[in-house]
Image (tube, rainbow, N blue to C red; front, side):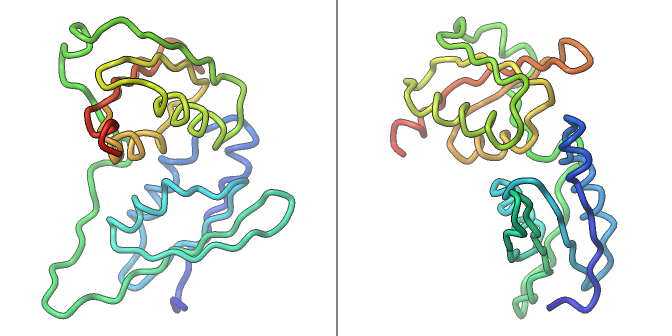
Length: 186
């Protein structure tokens, strides 16, 4: 176990309808050498595992009861001769998959629309990923969220999809997702 753990409890953020991803990335970026992060959440944040793994952290999770989880991220032991893992971009940019400037203008119209507003994580992500699995490569899904689905972006990227998020109001996000060709081979 890591000698020093910083604790971040995101349960109040989630209960207030907020998105904890930026706070988690800021906490991870502030960790010192050899430090780990103890995260308390209202769900098991599976997509976060791969993000933190890319930053050089292994994880251990434990259900606390009542739907709460404790996840401990510890630095991986360095492999002899391996270069250290550098953190990815700024916290607000981590995991984002963008189509490119102006590219969404040439996307086909959405063939499906999902209203994920009012749902607690991870429901919006699960519903979105299930809907995409039934779609053909090149088709576009429109999703509405009351918080930006930051943990969804790495999952989309891993599956070969593209996404574009437009903030429409203080708690309204429209995300267009174009199914990629990698979906057909998955």
